[in-house]
Length: 316
View 1 (cartoon, rainbow, N blue to C red):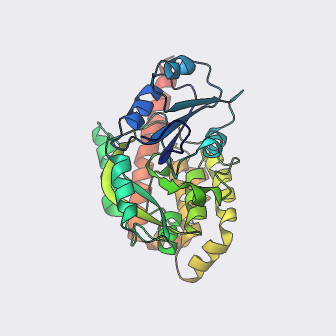
View 2: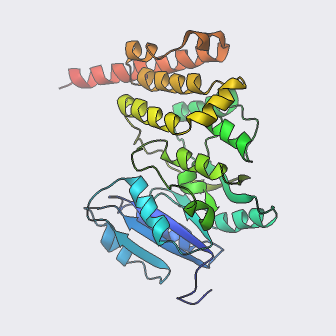
View 3: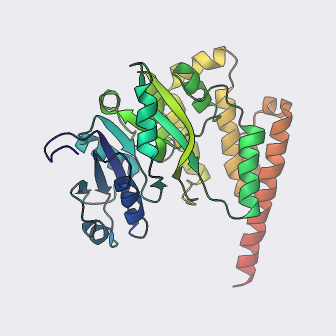
């Protein structure tokens, strides 16, 4: 391991807010990596629970603890971590997720076999889905709807991200050269969703990102999804930030705007707000048979949610 004043090989950035119950596991999973030449930069985004005490209880000089005066959002917290990072590489880990021990070693090994144009690498992640419904959703997402033509690269990977064919979970799976990261604008602090996709697209304008086909990260289901209205606002900003690239892909026949409008339909439908969702549905989307399957499935989920809400209201 390097001395205290020597830059580490990897800086692990862990943003956290009121997750005293999970942040220890995240930190310890970073410290347990087979790559030991690391620093763990924990950015506490104004927690009001016992997060500070939990972090203080971890006796390891590789852990650095930074606090915000108030809650400013995960994009700001991640950017604070980037600014503080000293490593050759930066890896991100959300405080409710955790890594398997060989995650960093496997990724660094993959990058060592690539040419300099490869500036980062991500891996698969595992999301425990104990319910039959969860397993069905996962199977439909992977086997029926997602059909990526590329899982790594540059422009070709950007296309797959924009069409939501690759869900890379970069908030906990991405390892990237710090110099490449500093050449971007960082995480967009006005986005509360899609901010990680936005960063990856910025990186892909500067180099290529590799893929490790191993589930080395555990990402529990969080339930912290934005409201339909928040999603609409975030998509507008996200798509406008990459409008030039999207126009290029659209001219080549890739339906990016339609895909994102369909995502909005999904969120409204899954919330049981069918009429509002239909307002975003483009007629040509119905030419694809799998979209009929999607609509039916989202309708079932939305109906279940409406019935559940009605039952809860009736029980008061």
